[in-house]
Image (cartoon, rainbow, N blue to C red; front, side, top):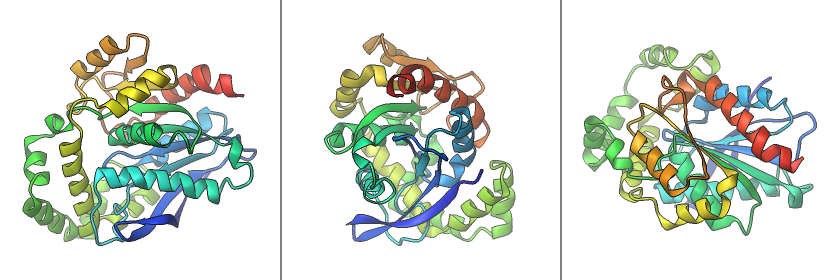
Length: 304
């Protein structure tokens, strides 16, 4: 069972650029229901390989699963992109899939979005803005950051991301770390050698600068829960899953409680106490199994 990663060109440019990439794993007899994993920040899709594989197997290999990172995070584009531009990027990615991978039977295609961290915010925006174009049947919000993101940043990260000079300086530092040292560091956080090699190849000045610049625009844009998010919550509550961390600075327990108070009938829960915000590094199995269980009980049994 291999995950394939391919480069593609967006149907239209964003800030003059159209080069992007995605990963996928396909079912032998695929369903019209397609699962789309929307990465957090950093938007390097290789971090999600274990999560996708486990989710695919736990759903009995019946559904195609795609993962999409963020424009510019591949390290091959010498421009930076805001979180708003990343929302547009996801719309264009879905357009691309319908025109290419799903061209036959595209009218039957239904999407389940699985957004991690800021990927949840992006997914909710996509659903709110583009439901006239795409048939969305669920959004799984995994450690979601759609409220007061700046407050969750550590003092060091705030110092780095909020100033252009420090973003550039830190990106330069990461660019010049020797490959062997980067690979040694990645050994502690990524189990598969192929993933370590792929991530290592993508780390350079421009990928680092994009990661930091996107974090900067997230801090500016993501404050109180906005009307677009509330629109999705109110209109699709039974289609949504929210999994919060119990020790997560980005989504503290007060955010969980606020959501429970506002939407008492929502599917809003805590992950196990030991699972951090970056669950894909060492806890992919726990979250993949829970997502699979919830989808089988609440979404997929209604669609098949």
